[in-house]
Length: 121
Image 1 (cartoon, helix red, strand yellow):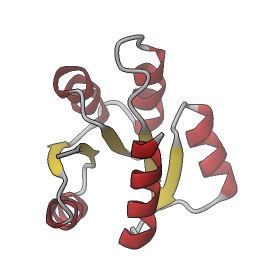
Image 2 (cartoon, rainbow, N blue to C red):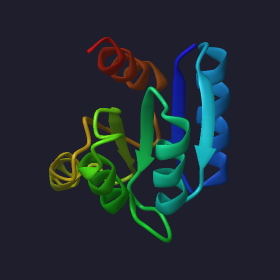
Image 3 (tube, rainbow, N blue to C red):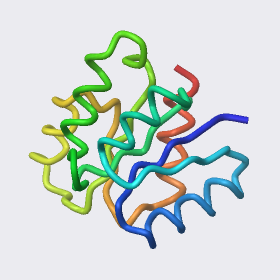
Image 4 (cartoon, helix red, strand yellow):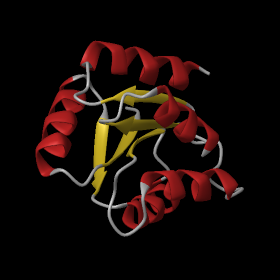
């Protein structure tokens, strides 16, 4: 069973995504801010991370950049999630090191395609 870490500060988004991904057969763990998310990536070594960009304590851009700069965890794929659908937001997330980008509210079918593609690579 593949492990997904969801780093999301909005409880409703966390709950919805975790339930839907669990039903699809993924083992889901959660973190509520960028600092806790970075610690969870290091400790639990998920197969993939869904990282909200607008997080408290340490934002998703910073947490993603720090994860990608860490030799031990840099190869774990990160999909940036944001409610901001501007091309500049996508470019900023990819520049921080995100492997892919998706907007919220999440289209589950599209997100699953991105997850599965990154897990195949």
